[in-house]
Image (cartoon, rainbow, N blue to C red; front, side, top):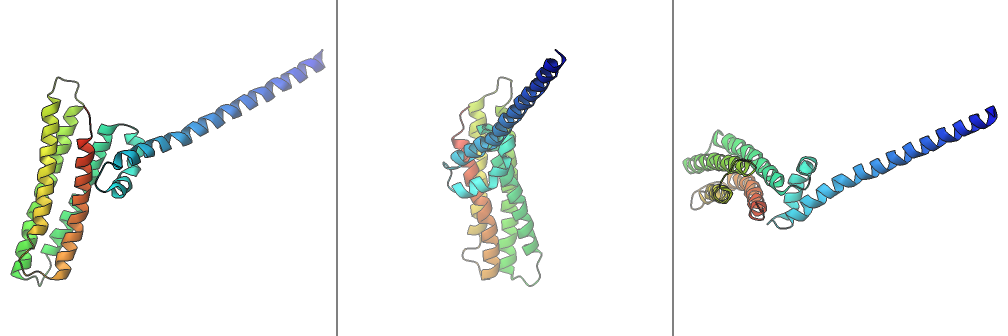
Length: 202
């Protein structure tokens, strides 16, 4: 009788161990599967943008926080764009401080610094307006979305104005290329963010 109890007890422990192992395996599979679902959501959403590969590259690290929420994805896109715009402002400001610039170069860069600064303010206004969409209060969401798109369009205009400011001015190729490449990166991110916002339903 004692021998039977020991055997039965051993079998019980083995069964428990197998069940726990199976449960851990299933949990692991689910955990591995979930991030793929999130990254696939970002990849699919980015396909609607002007620059899909840049969109995915800039937003894939936000997969865990965005999950499959379109509004959170738009907020992430705006956050990334604002940071890029700040980096561009830093780059252009350093160029403005360089010695040996011609008066034309100094004037063009100064205008560009102002344009990028305005663009950052407009992007921040867009992000602020986006925050109102998640409000539980009775807000005019159509008005908020219209405001977001207006601010975004204004930001794109300011970014374009920066590079247009170099046209017809005697500016060295190296200075022009540095500014243009920096601004172009922000302009692409802004365009992508606006595309995602245009596809947002609320």
